[in-house]
Amino acid sequence: MSTTSETPGTSPVISGALTEPFLLHDPARAWRVEAGYVDLFLARYLPGGSTGARTHIARFDAGAVLFSFPAPTDQTSRVVLAQPSPEAQVISAERDGLDHVGEAVEQWTVALT
Image 1 (cartoon, rainbow, N blue to C red):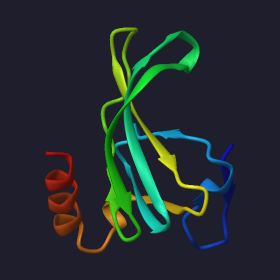
Image 2: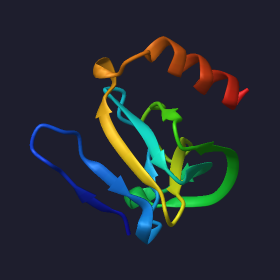
Image 3: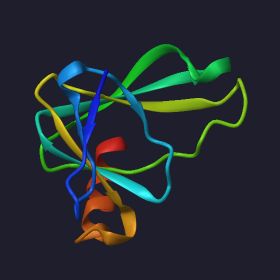
């Protein structure tokens, strides 16, 4: 399970120390990998918010920024799960508040193609 900590005036830090995956489906947010790495997986969305078998998409190392995918709408939907490495630190931030967002989106796009 991931733990979340927050310091006043900063974005929450999601620590992957407990290896709990999280969904990338909030279009207003982005996630920066500060340490370690995050693996992305594609999975089928199941009732109750669980997921089916995973297919590995990509690995993002420290310095990478992760962006959102559309939220699941029904049982035929696919979701993208972010699985932090045990030593990962991931910062969740408002997408509009990111510096160099154009460059980050370009790197994200290249990594996923």
